[in-house]
Image (cartoon, rainbow, N blue to C red; front, side, top):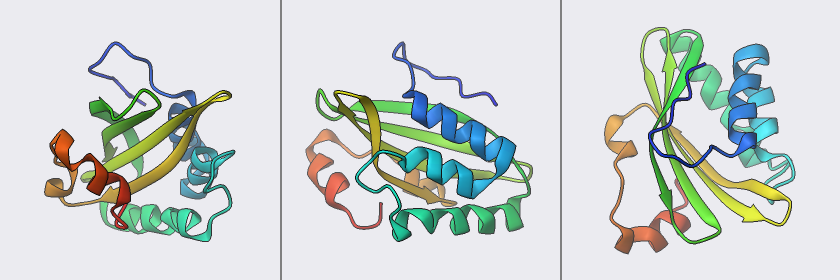
Amino acid sequence: MDGSKKTAEPLPPVLVAGFKAYLEKGPEDAVRVWIKGSGIDDSKDALSQANSLRQVQDFYGSYRSFDVFKTRMVTSRVEAFYLVMNYDKGPLFAKFFFYKTEQGWVLVNFNFNTKEEARRIQAPSATLSILTDQNF
């Protein structure tokens, strides 16, 4: 697992733990790690993302690593992480939004897409639409 980051700030431990679970145990374990303790913990919609990751594996082969290509502090308590998940035969683009609580970072929203244009960073003026977009 690469997980290299182009900023000085560390990744939320739960993000890294989810990718480790994905590599070692598979998509369902990764999603469970990512959403544990968050407002979307045990959400059927969130858990269905594991099915999406399985479908990607059907096309691209096994998950291998991830690269962080952008992070953005939305507010002092919300940070967005834009990643490329590397598989045997292709990339998957991912967005993760975390909220900092007194206990640490929790995932509030995430999205995967095989299309590169879905990973484009929107201007700060579009922050509200990013956070309320139902496609995330």
